[in-house]
Image (cartoon, rainbow, N blue to C red; front, side):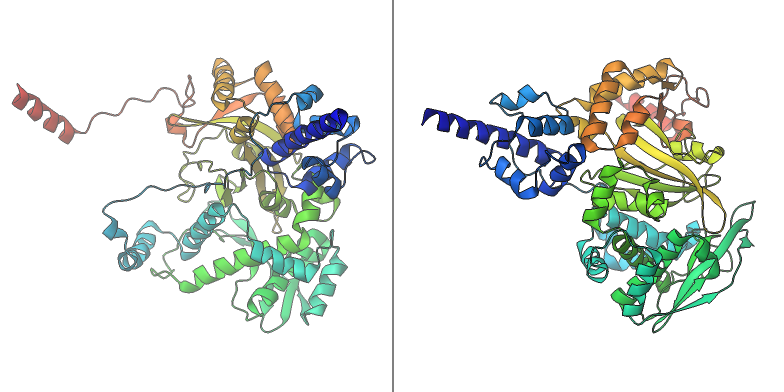
Amino acid sequence: MTNRQGLKRKAHFLGTKIKSLRKRNNLTLEDLSVRCIQIDAEAGPSVSYLSMIENGKRVPSERLLQIVAEIFQKDVNWFYDESLDSPAIDPAPLESAVSGIPLEPGFLFSENLLQLAIPELLAQTGTTGRQFAHLLIRAHQESNRNRFPDIERAAETVGRKRFPLDVEDVFDIANELALEVRWFDKSPFKDRGDTDAPLNMIVRSFYDAPNIIYLNNSLRDTPSRLKYDLANHIAHKVLHDGDGARAPQVSGGRVSGRRHDADSPNVDAQDILFAWRDFECSYFAAALLAPKTPFRQFLARHAHAINAGDRIGLTTTLVMRRMSSVSPYPHWHYFDAYPPGNLRAVYRGNGIPLPWGNMTMVSDPCQHWAVFRMLNTRSTKPSSQISVLRSGDDKRLYCCQSIRSKDAAGNPHVLCAGVDLAPALRAQNIDPFETISAIEQSCNAGGGSGAIPLEARRQLESISKILNIGWIAEGSGKDATIICPRSSGCPRDKPCLGRTKPKLKPQIDQIRDSLLLQSAS
């Protein structure tokens, strides 16, 4: 009886500890099962067996404990210590990645006044309705952590969670929906837009109601783009019954450009509708080509490399954007940057501050961001970077992987996916502030970039294994860099632009303070 009670007690504590680690790292039972099987296919548990272990109904083998210890970077003996770092409870609901501030007086932000003021604001700042719509959509994405289960379910119903899909599979889905495909020839053309150097622009595809998809013959040369465009229009058929109210799919040109004098000074409602439908259809297309569960397992096998899609005919853009939707770790961002420094696509699920002045093309953003540095290279290999981001007194630690590519029109651009490392450090009971400060001190000693101290590097390598994001370990082996939202506010000990003169107090304030001082005396 005593032995049976001891075995039961042992099973309870082992299961509770495994469950606590799994939940603290936002993994499902299936996620942990897959990670175990990837390390040792024979010893890896099924989902049901793992559930019994967590509930104390089975005792894990020594080999399985070694596997779990490797995944969560724990010593095996830790599992036999009958104490817990934290209770095995569900993680608290995630707060929105972006936050606002209450503005007073509140009546100025009433619906009626905003409807009057926003069009005037857009007209006077030269912001197009499309740009404004993308800002709204981005805020919606970020507040939802890029999780839209209704669109996921619609895509999985159509694609039946098959993965990977080849070109013929996607054409078969189009045929099942009674869609007709027609081809056209149209080469890239020059569109100057707002830049001194003309950009290439190409019309890739468009939809004609009720059921005709027009595809550019140039897509035949890049099956990954062909699959995406076809899936994008399948989405329009499924989500909007193919009513045709959507913009053509284009690459390059002035898609995100500022308003020209010939444009209407009023907000075009169609701009906002089309922008939203573009988002819905692109999300559906990604979910169709990369369904959540199998794609999540695919990313785990390839340590979240942003160019892993090359193996299965998926564009790097799709892989990069899809990571933030399917990863167990929710603290992601991604950028798509075009020369000289314009971010065409942005997602900030981790609340990373944007480089200053992006929409107005002000040449003041910090040039040490990896996404901007890659614009000036010719390498097409992925590059990882650890960055300490300083915005005022706020210090953050990020790791990203960037890659230089060309869009369908032949324009060079840089794709970048990254994660906030502080939540991962905190989950392992490591004080992020101490780690960030140690890395920042090393960077300042090197003039803004420096080797990551040994202890901090050890911590990041451990986080890389726990999150199964290989490029965190890769980045920790390189010099880290201090970055900021704006060069003129450089937080380095030796600022990039030299010491800036302190701002003088406005003369009106000086007069006021002088008079108050005289009155007091």
